[in-house]
Image (cartoon, rainbow, N blue to C red; front, side, top):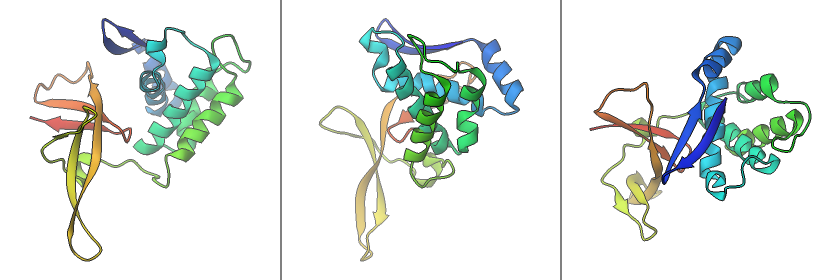
Length: 190
């Protein structure tokens, strides 16, 4: 149905579009399919795709937790974040996947850990990035200015770009998408 794989030094999320579309039709919204894709992105961000160990209940729970976290950051309710697992997860643990109750609990843990943010926000609109700054660790950060308590200007870092996200359906060559350390997807133009 969906898988996170690393091949030739690149990371991919593979999915069956019929499966994704069927989830959306069955639930009446896109949160179910977004949770599947977020789960697969979670495998990449947690390093599961480079370990070579394949699916294991513990790594599936980590990816489930990331999915819950990401969906809350995007504005999903806990019910929306758990809908897919309620539909497709097996009741019992297998050699590769945990049982439904453990998966729902992991998604809830991730959703709760996303903090007090109950709706998603568009970082690109609320905090416009400035010129990128290379840090000593080789990552790119985008600083922004905010007012200090005494009216002074304080420079702080708000975005760490983890990598580029490619959407096959978006053919606009003037925009690019990036995943941030805050689990946001930014769309940048030019």
